[in-house]
Amino acid sequence: MRIDHAEPVDVIHGACTKVRLSVRGDHPALPPTMLMKAGFEPHSPDMRKMHVNEYHAYRDLMPSTGLNVPDCLCAAMDEDGRALVILEDLCLRGVRFLSLQRPIGFDLAKGFLAGLAKLHARWWDAPELDSDFAWVPDTGETALEHYFTLLLTPDLFETYATSPRGAAMPRMLLDPPRIRAAHAAMREAHKGQARVINHGDMHLGNLYLDADGTPGFLDAQPRLGAWSIDVSYFLIAGLDLVDRRRWQGALLAHYLGCLKAEGIDPPSFDDAWAAFRRDVVWGLLIWMLNGSHFQTEANNTAAATRFAMAMVDLDTFGALGV
Image (cartoon, rainbow, N blue to C red; front, side, top):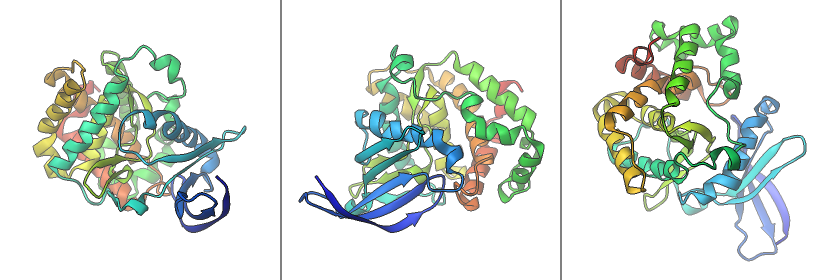
């Protein structure tokens, strides 16, 4: 197949650059448009690890999961570690993209949890995790260097603490040493849990619905670690505060049932609930310190506030003993 012509139709700026391309070529099945994701932002040199992780996710991971994901038409990386992917244009099949500004309902959350359980079950505590997936980062401070640099630099942290999201959060949470201690305690608790490959960024902006309502998954940032970071992150970021309080137990039980249906002996509800409570700090750390050039401040504030209130509701610091 030869492409004779390609030109940008529109560009979306953010953590990476999304460019919709109009294309023409010599193959009758060539779609009229494609989506390229690459690093054309001023901050892109500092985000190469993220781009490489996404390159592997689209090329090596998600096609083998059986989940509804966009076709990856090309994944390329140069010798300097600059990576890009070219994906099918989902707009051509009429999908509905979800948004952090519009929390989802109970049944839709169940559908996405079923997909998440399918992903987790695929490599549930598998012996090949360390050998076949050496490219997948873990949940340690080194793998979260961007966030911990901000957390451990008082002047930088203060810019987030005084931003709209910081102003919307309980003051007790604006405590970098305590957040760092909570993250370390979370990691220690994970040693007793099954390891999986997590989607790694299961917020609504990375999810969609096909025209028939089938849940779809975008833009994984895979993480090797406990299953509970994905489940906690998804439910807290995706549900309205009041709905999360009403539904979190039932939805967690649903996820455990989906694991069982995938052939996994799931943790008990009590153990899963304890993990769910502890792992709220994972999402808090990310959304408290997420750059406004990655997501709008409205999105950052919406998500950070949901995690902040979950920290209080679920007494996450108490659950972690910090």
